[in-house]
Image: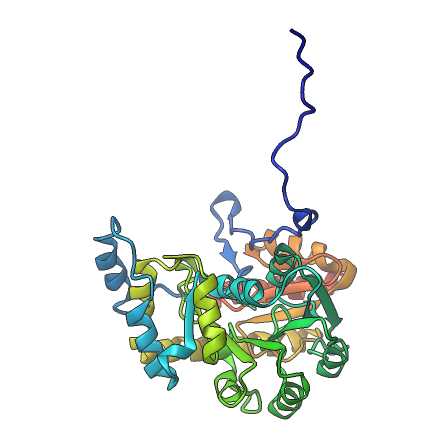
Length: 365
Ligand SMILES: *Cc1c(COP(=O)(O)O)cnc(C)c1O
């Protein structure tokens, strides 16, 4: 009996997955020869958990043989009260990236378009491509700010979702109320506009609007928030959306069942209840942001106004050299080759090391 071997063929994977850019996590900090090293590459919070949060998490860990509350009931009730929105308008997920992915799944597929600024959050192209939809990238202005007029012009009848990252990762720049309202009101009502406000707590410019005010009378606006940045729960993976009922309901339909652990849910509730301490910490980081930006400007750098917990330096071809120089000085930053470097505001000591490295680099070139 002669057997013709089948051609070597694995499972057939979707064409859409070909060439998806890999998400680049911020490099971990690794000090050489016992030197201190600081990770300023992922916009994390440098502080330990807020009071009560670790206890809540440890208590929840007692029962991790059980599935978590699938509806995240206690967390959603706490969020509803905190933000003054109906519980039915809130949907949670495994980080706000998880929620963003659900939003795309709920709105877009092959043949549809997802519009976002570029450069912006690197998850957008990845989750768009996974869905099979097409990315439409609209370049930032020369000042590294969202170009809302160009984004509006990029809307076609195929557009299903638009991300507005405010403040923008990685540039820290923010769009103001008047221009954003004009944009929201000009986009067709059947296109979902996602205001990604991962850094909202760090905004100090009163002209930068709170998305939660903008969504209230706009059924096609959805606000994304996260516990990963200001709240310091990046490792627990919990974020949420605030949107009108059809959108929030669609998010519940597309969410991974039991995606948010009980540890994350209880820690998030405790974090919301520790808001006073949170605000003190955020104020400290905002002050450091001002100090770092001021020192960089004094060194001669051009620093776009940041409303987030990081600063952006457009270094072009010198980007990777600059990142290497920082690393040698004990701080790991986040380079985007050929474009620039994003530097998280961290502990004072880390910020100082970064400023020294930046000054040295400037004198050398
Ligand atoms: C960090 C970040 C998020 C949050 O991601 P999580 O999944 O909640 O950790 C979302 N959007 C932007 C723009 C971010 O920078």
